[in-house]
Length: 300
Length: 191
Image (cartoon, rainbow over all chains, first blue to last red; front, top):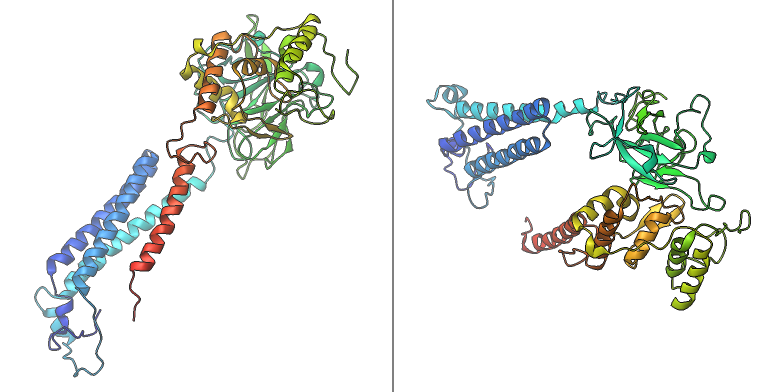
């Protein structure tokens, strides 16, 4: 950046930095705009969490940074190749005093540029670091709208009647009057032959005529547990199980959702059920454990 | 009447189960521990009708009457996504569940689709008329036959009917390679 170039006048070594003052101004403005855009990313992350806004902001940051670099490079390097000649006569070095006192000197503009680059860098650094907050404890984990007496409704909001479920069938249910999209809400309700049940002590009365309810959120990575296998001829076929389609974690329906296979680290949380007088199903208590993927800090 | 731990009793399974297992070639099974899979039927159509009539005479549900033309494609897609796609994939291409493979549905007839939903063959869950009514069953059969017979492969190369994202990924991979070659050819080596 400071070496004299072949096509430059040897007697004016400052020409390379004084080439075009407006270029430096434009570069500085672009850098500051990039800083504003990445600050916008941080604001979007903290305030709305809207990934589209965040993507737009960080995208704009990199576009503006790129433009600033283009302007910066074009203003300083110019066109064509620059070959450094070693056999040049001794260049005239301006004294430090000359540079500092020169009106509109390159130092001031350099400082502006460096300052803008510093602000942009700091802002981009903040944008890179602030999302680490997402690695912290998930506030939703372990919370669930399921309470004793809350009714099960289907995706259309109709209460789930026990009689509609044939043995070997399943459906998805939600808590009445609560969020359907909250992690702790969706249930997979299955009906199996009651003679297959093998519940651990304390869960003997959690099923209603072979109808059992489990969290639909896999304890491994949080996918929807969308598969039920139920043998038509149990003597010769694998037993009833809920299977997650993402990594094939397999949970034993007959025994409290214990893991039979796959990467899940803990059993699928179960919801105790009971029958209301009108034949619909309701929760007889809270979920048996924290719902959601097996993040650190979840003890079972 | 069946043999304990070998074969189930056929009393009460009805014409529905017999027609499904025989017309899809799942039965007879080569060995009791195998998963029944779709193959060419072992019997002629007339023999299957006679066998089905005999099993039906022992009691049980009759063969359902499925008419996709009375169904709704949109409703069928929603129901299939909710109840079936977990195992069969939204494209009906099949897959696996722990302990078994899940069949593709590209050869399933509307009647066989209805039979499978009501029967729950092998490890498949079953759905009664209270959970999926006749219209919903017609709609599912319409969706399955439409989507497996006329898959929407806009990209030209189906890649397992997995949709635009895998197709786009492959396009990116190929395009990136091509761009690298172009860059290598047009670039100038520093001297």
